[in-house]
Length: 217
Image (cartoon, rainbow, N blue to C red; front, side, top):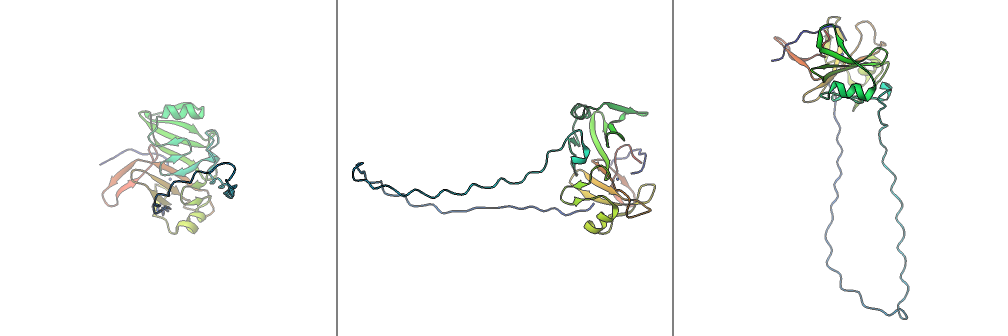
């Protein structure tokens, strides 16, 4: 059972789609050997028609480490900020420094308001990635999310009616060991959404395990 001290307010259920293709074929009997023909008597063979070139499959744009607006959010992280990676490696990728919070290394982070995101780590391991829909709004297997109303339109009612000290509605997109918390505003459906990607959960007596971003309460 995990317990932790949390600070600051902030960050559902969703559906997953998987597409698989299978091809099957039957073997052909071995063909008899070709007859040997002399060049004089051989007739020209008809050329096989050329197959049209297959169109390349579309690929997702590559995330720019310096531009969080290009990042896709998933339960595993956002852009180059992946849960479980060394915080020092993320600092090197993004060209940003590691900042220790006033409580020390347990809440060190890369990023900040100017960078457009926070990646919070403990013992040099990324445990939470936080960013606003004003910066990035593409959520894997969900779509573009900019406001709380977008969450309502796409995902329906919130998973948690009141999340955090401010009583904000929250939508939870869970994976096996991590989750995306999309936290709306307690005041308006038109406000930006705060995203928290985290692998931190704590136990409560009544509600069981609750996802909560590291170093936020």
